Length: 219
Image 1: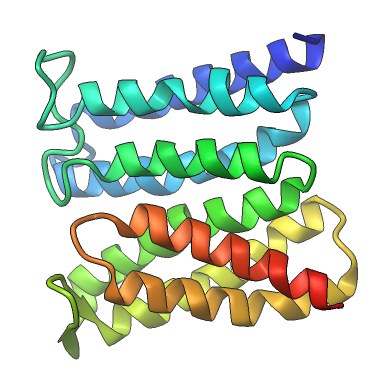
Image 2: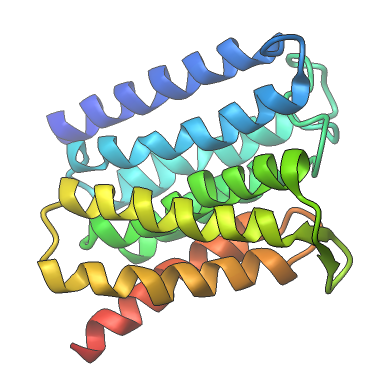
């Protein structure tokens, strides 16, 4: 483990711990708002990825432990570690979130911008889709068991494109790669729209990142 890995681990754990503690009591007495702030806020870990030097450290020491931690703060936890941050919505959503980050880190460690694309779609995209859909969603649809809204899907696509563009600037990606954001975000939005039971935290991140990667290979 290198010095960079140790700094990366420290930064990730401090940041995520702060988010959990900040949202644990509820923001403005709303557990739903707290959960969404946590869901979106964790996406900022993309800016900590360059600190890591080693794949196994990022995947199995930084990301994978959060699979167990998020399960312990879910409604399915066998112990009452803290109040259930995920008590509203899909109880295992954050667990799937941690699984996605682990898989992305393992598969695309040498292309950090691809990890970022998947995490952005999962955190900012899916998070804003839910928030906008709940507050403003009027045109609803249900494909495989979960009710979604057109307004939420538009928010998902728009936020994914905008935040991913900023992330690619951060990672100094070639200009031509920016054109690939739109089809990748569209696939992620479709995945969010059809995936039920909180599993969109898996399907959105992986489908968006893999689509983006495959598009790069065609250039």
